[in-house]
Structure formats: structure tokens, C-alpha cells
Image 1 (cartoon, rainbow, N blue to C red):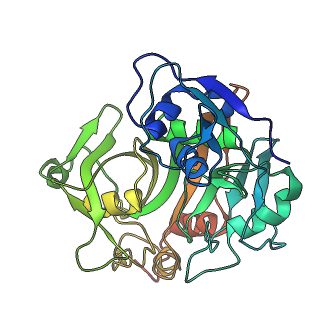
Image 2: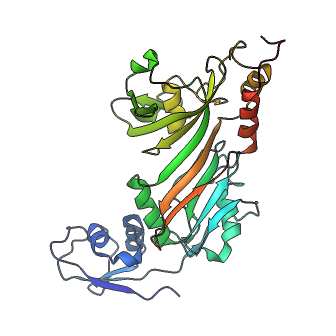
Image 3: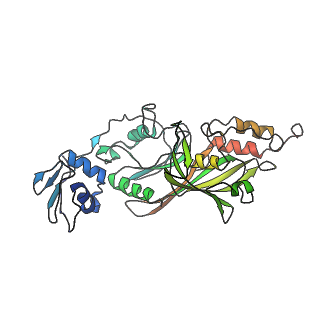
Length: 348
């Protein structure tokens, strides 16, 4: 059995198309996105003045009576798997996870299982009330397979709708920790000449460009200044290593959230992430600036040294302000300790 039918009237001066009119006038408490409404129309769950309509382009007029029957959420086609998760917070509407290195967020042709979604389907079980008509977790943002850290996932349509709106409005607080080559500094004349790079008070580097898929390598993103999608990254040095500063721990925060944004932007500014296999994070390090232990740890680091450390948002159902912090994973902590080690007399 589905939910009781949702009934309402089209308000004054409506858009001509049914889907657009429903998107505007459907009660907010229903938490039905335009995409969901279009699917309900196509599946015959919408009546207009008593008659089933399945064409999203059907014309509507003020006062038309709409009845929407929302069916029970169907089981997901994705398999549930008993994979351990570090749950930071969970309630009826959402769950916050500290994702480990090596875990893909969503199944894809190359990784059909072993993903965060597979794990969440098992962990959440019947507490998933349905997202987009299916009993599945609602993914509103992602981090790369080899990036660790915090993710929020919706368990209900209401949470999915509300979280997606916050990400679209860029009101979600997201801070990352990265270990990079060099140390971005406002006094560096080279950076002053890089298009799209500027500095703000507190020695905060700001990078503003467009980002788009690389023309010849689909695994990479590329910096553009025409076309693509607007991207803004800010970063500041937390700790530097070596004399002169050869590697640094930086805190990055996002105004936008594009694919590989931090990795692409910092590489563009000349401060690529240690260990980054895609954007060239395996540069040779000066043996005069760092200890042999630090050099070896950095050069052998097996992934991009990036961690989603802080996540803040407004709970989409309760309205409560929420903020979570995840400590650096052990591999990044060990790398920092090695970088801090002093140069021995045998390695002057």
C-alpha cells in the first residue's frame, strides 16, 4: 500500500507545463523534487481533474485539481553488504560517515560492489524510508576513493531534498586537510603572476577558475577560464616542513564542490598534493631541506594526501545546526611525523 493521495489545486498564474506547475505548487512537506515528480507523472501516479496524465508537458490552468499517489518505496537493485562503517552520527533522516581510504562511494561499472552505498544498505536496513522512490541512501556529495573523511548521506526524501538544496546554495561547511609540495605564501612573486590566484588576509590563498573534464584524459579535470563550471578554493598553511619550506600541511575550504577541485586547483597553483597519482604529486624532494625519513615517507605515500576533516550543515528536518570533525587518518599522521623528523648528521 502506498501513502494517502496528495491533493491540491494549481495556484494562480501557473507555468504552462504540468511538471513545472507541480514543482511550484506541490506542498513543501511532500518533499518531491521535480525529477521525482516527472517520474511519478510518467508512471501514471498523477491525476489532473480526475484523469490520469502521463505527459509532463500537459497544459494546466489555475484551479485545476491535482492528485498524486506516491507508491511505497521499492527495494533497491543494489545489493547490501556487511562492510564495517565508522558512523559519526545517525538519526531517522540522515547518517554521517567517516569514509576510509580505498572505499568508492557509489557503485559503477568498474566497482559494482564494496562501496559505501552497499555498506549503507546493510547498515541502515529498514530505517531507509525511501529516496526518489527506492529504499536506498541518498548521496548528495562524494569524495574520491582514495580521499578519507566525512560524508553526510540522506535516509529519507525530506533529508535528501533539504541537503541537496544546501549543497546547491554552497552553504555547507567543508574543510579539508592536505599535505602538499611547497608552502603557498603571499610573498611568493610566482603566485602573484598566476591567473585566478590571489591572497586574502591571514595569508589565505584563493583560487578562482572554471573546471571541466580534460580534453584527452577523461580521468582528469582541467583548469579553464571560459566554459566549464565555476570553482573557488581557499587554503592556508597550518604547518610547514623543511628549511626552506618544502612540504606543508594546508587547510582547504570549498565555496564550490567540483570533481577533484582541491587536487586540480592546488596543482595549478604549483602546490600539488603529496602522493597524487593523477595530478603529479610525486615530485623529487630536496635532501638538503628534509630528513631522509621525511623524504622517503613522502615519496612512498600511496595516495593523494587529502582528508575531509570538517563537515557542517543545517539538519534538513529539525533545523539544528550540525558540525562534525574527523581526525586525520593514521597514514597522514605518520607522514607528518616523518616530515617533522630532524635531518641526521649523515644527511646534512
